[in-house]
Image (cartoon, rainbow, N blue to C red; front, top):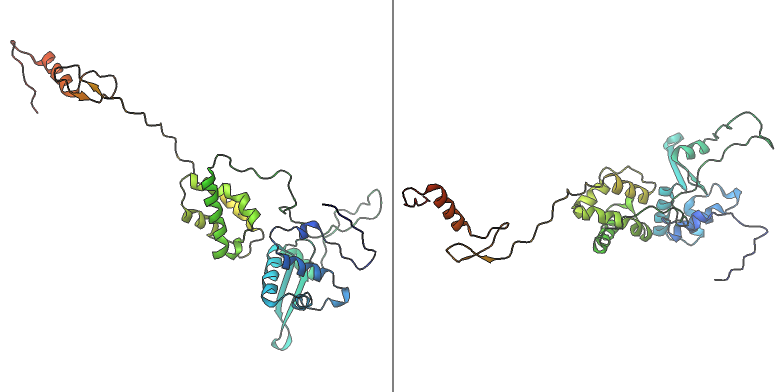
Amino acid sequence: MLRHVIAPERFFTQVSNEIIRHPRLSATAVRLLIWELSRPDGSKDQPLSKTAEDAGIKKTAYTRAKRELKAEGYFHEWKYQVARGKWRTTQMVSNVVLAPEEARALRDGVRPAAPSASKPATGEPTTPPVGHYPTNTEGKTDNPPSQPSHVPAPLIERGGLILASLSHKERRLRLNGRDIQQLAALAGEWLLRGATAKDLREALTYGLPDRVHSPAALTRNRLTRKMPEAPAFTAPVTAPQPLRTCAGTCDRVFRPVADETKCRDCRQEAATLSAGGVGGLTVQPAF
């Protein structure tokens, strides 16, 4: 792939690769965020819905994109009541992930204090930036999490299907194809250890927080932390002994348990003759 790129001299917006390649944001959500970030400062009172309209995003797609941006920490919204019972909405978008408390602090004009009053070697002390880039994005390939390698492929495939079905019933656990591919082996490990599909779904969906910032990270955490115990080791069942002809007087065929050469009846008869013979008479065993 050949590339020819010229940096624009004006009218441009800096957007990180973390946003462009975000594994959980749809193309519509990325487009909406970039459009809002690229708007001039004078349009700060324009609601996000108007930006979506300018970007050609329909209402249903806008609602879904807004929900994605909010779940990932790029969009925050507050509704509160003002005079005469009217309601007012304040919205905030960011090019980095903001926790709710960080967004509220920025909304209220509160900035973190400088780390120290001492001056650095060069320049003045600066206020640390607020927010952070997501750490589990698609572009990150260093040190990928380890996956079970002993799980059979059919169980991995079945585990992936179970994870994919979670998105249909629980929107807070929406996983994309890459997430499912990375987590399928862990889900397959559950099945290998005797868990059912119902066990797996309940472990992943029970007691979810109201807001899930990273469905993939939460799912991985629960798959690892709640992993059922491996079944206890059992000795392999030995193959049965081959049939053999009794070496006693009955000449019957029997299957020995160990190294017996006579059937049970002949062994019992021999034991009786050895211990119960009196005056040349044979004492018959009572059954």
